[in-house]
Length: 105
Image 1 (cartoon, one colour):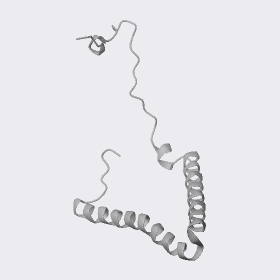
Image 2 (tube, rainbow, N blue to C red):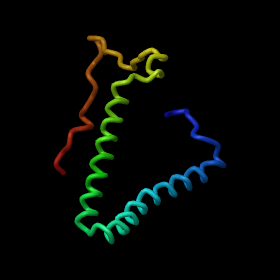
Image 3 (cartoon, one colour):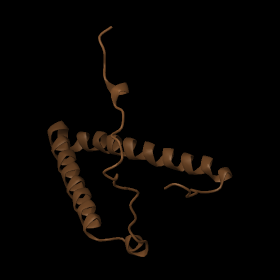
Image 4 (spheres, rainbow, N blue to C red):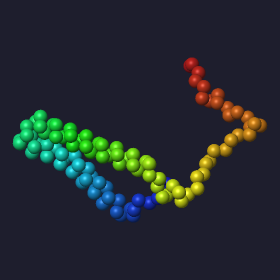
């Protein structure tokens, strides 16, 4: 993501505030819902429902990530593959690694 701007500086505060609101809602709504369900279904029923919801959401997340990994992005085909690796010639001396050695003091 080097060289990519995420937005004007004056909008970054609003973007971070929106992220915080969503984060707080994502943490508080399940807790409020669990409290409401406990009154009707009891603690055991609510815990089982919560565990089932978490299992379904985790399965959906894993399936989504796997499908994204299999599907090549259009951006990957638009740029040629480049490498910065260069092999050393046989006449190149080996690097001095003595600075990496540890000595007892």
